[in-house]
Length: 306
Image 1 (cartoon, rainbow, N blue to C red):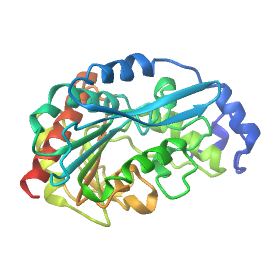
Image 2: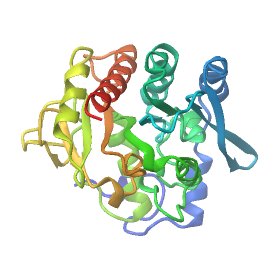
Image 3: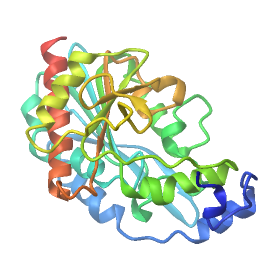
C-alpha cells in the first residue's frame, strides 16, 4: 500500500489545512489557453446558437466566463439533451468532444431536441491540466446544494431553469495515467489517508447511475463507441476502477449521492463517459471521436425511446 508520505505536500495521516493548500496552489502552472481553445471556438457558433454566459469564476487575479451553447429556437414541447465536458479540466477530450459535436453534428438535431452544451465547466483547471479547482476541491464531487465549488454551483444555477425537462445528460470524462501517479496520491494526502493503488483501465467505459440504471441506453452508447475505439475490459476481479462491471464497458455509481455532474437533473437517461488517452491503442483524435460518437448515440437512443 502507498501512503500519503509518497506525496510531497503534507504530513502523513494529517488532512491538509490552509498552508498545505497554499503550497499545492503555488505549484500549479498554466499550460494552455481557455480563451483560445474554448471561447474562441464557441464564438464561431454564435450565428447558429445562443451562447449563454451562465456565470463567472472569480479566482483573483483571474476571472473566467462560463459559457454554454443552447438551441436558439427553443421549444418547450421538445426533449432537452444536456452535454457537459471539462468538469475535470485535465480531461481534454471531454472539452474538445463537446465542442466537436457542437461544430459538426448539433445542427442535425434542429427541430427535434433542445440542446444545451456546456463544454468546459472548469476553465481554471483546464488551463492547468488539473482535476481540482484552486481551493483543492474536486468539482465532480460537489454538485449539491451549497456547493463548495464555484464551478459546480454555477452549473446548478444555470440548469435549474430547465432541469425537469432534461431527458438525457451525458458528461464527458477521461481516466488517465496521472489519476494514479498524481491525482489519487494528492487526494490521499489532502484527506490524510492512505492510498490504495489501482489499475488504470485500457479503453473506453461508461458510468451508469446505480439509482436509475438504464442498461439498454448504456449498451447503445458502448456499441457506437466500439466502432471508433476499444472498450475497456474488466480486470482480474471483474471490475473497472474498483467497481463491478455490470455489462461490457459499464460500471455504476450512485450519481446524486456522490455529487456527480451526471446526477444534477432527474433525466431518465444519464451516463458519464471515460476515455483512456494514454492507451497505445488510441490517439488523441480517436478519444475526441469516441466522445462525439457517445454523444450522438446517447441522443439518438433517447429520441428513439422518448
